[in-house]
Amino acid sequence: MIIGVGIDLVEVNRFRELISKRNFLSRFFSKNEINLDIQSLAGRFAARESLYKALPDKVVFKLSDIEVIKERDGRPEFIFHNELLRYFQSKKVFLSISHTIDNAIAVVIIESTE
Image (tube, rainbow, N blue to C red):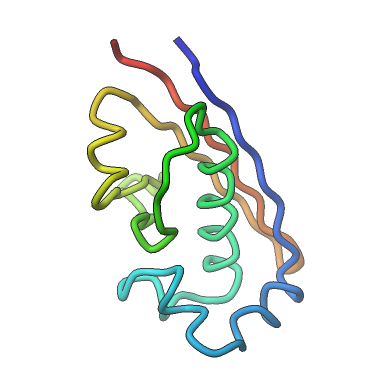
């Protein structure tokens, strides 16, 4: 059963301004993500925001507890750490990310497996 849906759109130029601020990248992204191009980072930020919007329970977590990876087939997937790892043990999360030069968008669907 679907228990949450979230969507987020990030303007790449506005996001570029955000990442120029001190410690922004290290607070929100994993070491594996930091060196990605600006559109990929914007997409991963949109994914984190979409996940937050999709959560039916407002779980307290840090955005750094989320990592977005690409599977071999090219699909994005979340890797969770700390509280989120425990929270999502009984749930399935679907993620889609797309971007252009100007915008990045992500959609998240959370499904209960219980």
